[in-house]
Image (cartoon, rainbow, N blue to C red; front, side, top):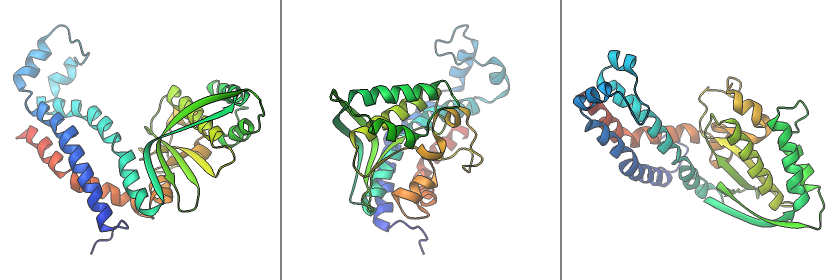
Length: 274
């Protein structure tokens, strides 16, 4: 019996999407690595100059070539996998809620002084001031600015979900380990979006689709904890997948689907050692 909380047709849609993406984006990376011969790595190790800055003579002296190839796969794999989360969330959300859309652009005229107020408040975050206001407080202050001078702005959210509760959710789905500039840019972007949606039942969040530390209490990545309103603006792992997108158990069900669909990729990677 299938214990997944997701309906069979939704699981099938996810598997078809991921299988197509893996075949087009991930397996070619592995094939390129498989076709990279040991002699190529030996020649590479002997070169005095590496334009890509990948020379690691001590590691290469100890690690077998296959291990070095797999190490080089990790970063591009992680980057390309990260691009699947938006569509996976859309597929699930579209089943449970009235509307779900990736790459949702929102436009509108806002008070020019409100934009300036957002910039002022974000400077407190940029300086890590003890007086930095919470994300909800920044949104309230910006919305409270009244100015006859208007400014047309356009913001694109990674994912929009018109929730069954009536709330419109706009999400930034990004790395669980952002740098300082990424943190501040995401807060600015979502504060501006809230300004466009002033007076409407709309909420914005920075989504970490998985938690590399396991639990919210254990999460300790310095930039995110310092330059994002972690308590009010960040959704971690199940808080997003189970709390808003789908029913309880959605996150683990999705991991299982990635595992099942990724079998072809794993077999191709294992061929590096054969």
